[in-house]
Length: 164
Image 1 (cartoon, rainbow, N blue to C red):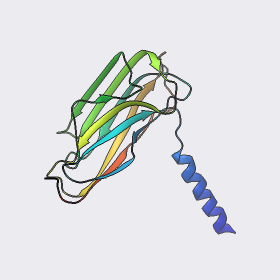
Image 2 (cartoon, rainbow, N blue to C red):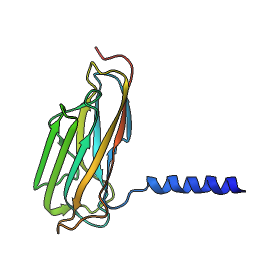
Image 3 (tube, rainbow, N blue to C red):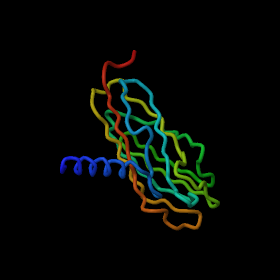
């Protein structure tokens, strides 16, 4: 009997952490498996709950030896229209992203604001790159904070031989 309770509790906890909440920002897909020289795309998705998304500041850090990103960031279907600034620094393994829209986008639990395109360098050794996403701020069109801003990164596993 105690084993069943423990299992049910663990299943309940796993389910609870998988649910998005207003203020959550995540990379999709959450995991990828690629080989050196292979391109990939990650969508940046925001849960603004019942509020419109008016602005964001996000920071991404990654292992620059395993992944590199294009310096041009593609806007998603729900991109903010007033201002978008991206600073991709592959030499440091960081991307800083800021967007603003005075009228707001959404509301919604699955707002696709950006697409980050990248690749594993052709000389990348096998390894796992943990991409850490920090949601510095998320605001609505009235400049009020949306939920508790929280970032969920991704994992990219680089395997196998390089593409020729």
